[in-house]
Picture 1 (cartoon, one colour):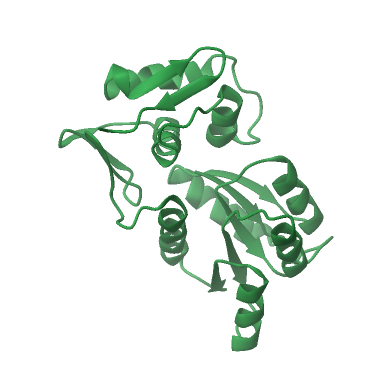
Picture 2 (tube, helix red, strand yellow; picture 1 turned 135 degrees about the vertical axis):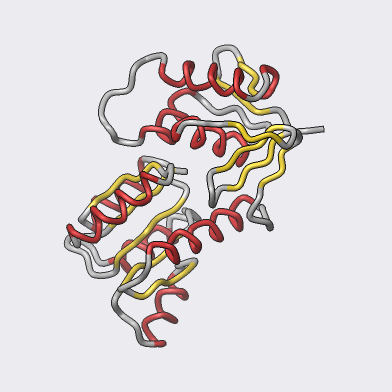
Length: 220
């Protein structure tokens, strides 16, 4: 799951990114509102964590511009503005949820999981996909009821396939989801992760679509 964090508080930003990365999220962090909007116009993210008081462009202005462009990426506002009127304005501008600072990381992650389930149509915390069962909250994966040990990037890749069943995902798209802006990516890294997923789950799970990318077949 690829997250865009737009937060100008250095200490808070570092803490959020470290905690979410440890839990398997791919987090890209920006400290300027204009840069945040530019990133959303050029890259794809699964969720935006958005501060309201930002240099360059305020969070509400960024959110309004995003929705004006018909970009429906879920947005979770993180702010110290705690009045009811502030919350109403944020939600009416297009936010999907609103979390008051200071907050516990556990609550932030729970709200993120809820937004992700809503976005991808998963009503229950556990994702059932044929022979595969995934609990995003605990990062536990089971195949036919037996626990499968996946690395962080393998788990991120697995969730991307489960959230887009039957869709062809290009190598570039998968690289963005797994690595984001974190430096150079080896040319065959996605192929290596897919090889490991097929080996740990089952070979037929991920299909190669020659010249286009990969897809997970919808379970029968």
